[in-house]
Structure formats: structure tokens, C-alpha cells
Image 1 (spheres, rainbow, N blue to C red):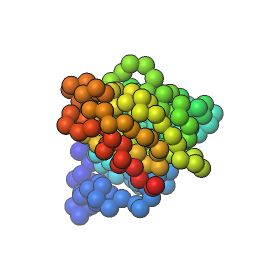
Image 2 (image 1 turned 30 degrees about the vertical axis):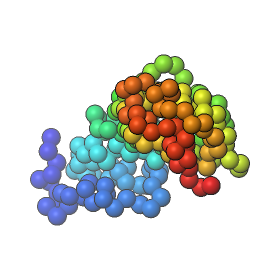
Image 3 (image 1 turned 180 degrees about the horizontal axis):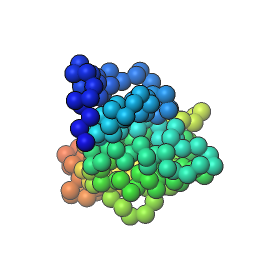
Image 4 (image 1 turned 135 degrees about the vertical axis):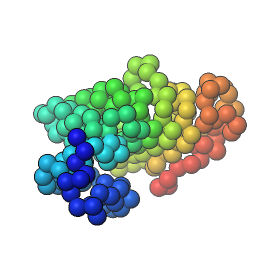
Length: 212
């Protein structure tokens, strides 16, 4: 059903306005757009649910799921996104009980995932997230950040294993991560199909670190 004729014409572009002017610190709290649109009336609910791009970005997926709850909040958020390319960030340790549900939910939609930010606390958090052999074939941008008190140290092998899982990756940023990389040519580290390291050595890539 098309709900647009039931609301003033000047409001038809509202979803685009929210996309162009997001809050400075976006969250997925119940009081924020697009969830706020669902509370107005049936017409606005129809507009929000028929605008997949409104639901394609998840800033800190843990806001949508609390300890002791299931992952229905995150799944309900992503459902209106339909087949849109997704941008998702996760903050915290993957060892927390409810984070396993978050990881499983994201893995189910990995073919849609184009932007991923992982702000972890421990080295094994990456291993937990990238468990199994699934390929994140649509992933274009990856940020690995540290939310601990000290700079997180990763070995070149740990970073390489992550890069191998994303053959279409175009950008990888390490945020407050320590990683000393030898000057090894990219073809020794990534499959030939990888676009990220085809023509550059691993050392300049690892030099792209923020917050240090």
C-alpha cells in the first residue's frame, strides 16, 4: 500500500532528510529515527517501513539487544532493509553472552554487508567474529578498532586471516591497533582475487592506523 498520498506533500521527502542529516552520535535507541517514525501514526509507519535505506545502517548493534534478551530487536531492525547494502558496527567484546547472537545475525546477512566496524577489546574477539569459513564477499570497507584501555596488539597473521575472508575489500583501517608488518608482497598474503592488496605491500596498509 502506498501511504504517501495520506500525508502532506512537503513531508514526502522526510526519509531522505533523515538520511542526509543524521544525529551526530547515532544510536538505535527506541527514541531515535527511524523507530521514532513508527510512533507517529499508521501513515508514517508505512513510510518508514517502505524506505529500506533508513534501516541499512546499524551503529553499535548491541544497542538493539540487551543481556538476557534474544536477538529479535536486531533482526526486526534489519528486516525493513530488505536487500539493501548494510553498514554495521559492533562495540564490545564478542565473549559477552548476547554478542554471539549478534554475530550469528550478521553472518546470516553477510552477503549484504558492505561496511563493517569492529571495535573489540581482546585479540580473540576477531577470531570469534570471523569463525567458520564463510566469505564476506560483498564487504568493501573494514575498520578494526580497540575499545580497551591499552593499544591492542595483533600479529600480521591475525590481520591476514581477516583480510582473506573479504576478497572484495577496498579499504581497511586499524584504529588504535598495534601491528608490525614485515615488507611482504601482497600476493603472498591474499588470494589473487583480492582488490585490496593487489598492487601494494602489506606494510603501508598496516601503517594506516588512527588514534596513535
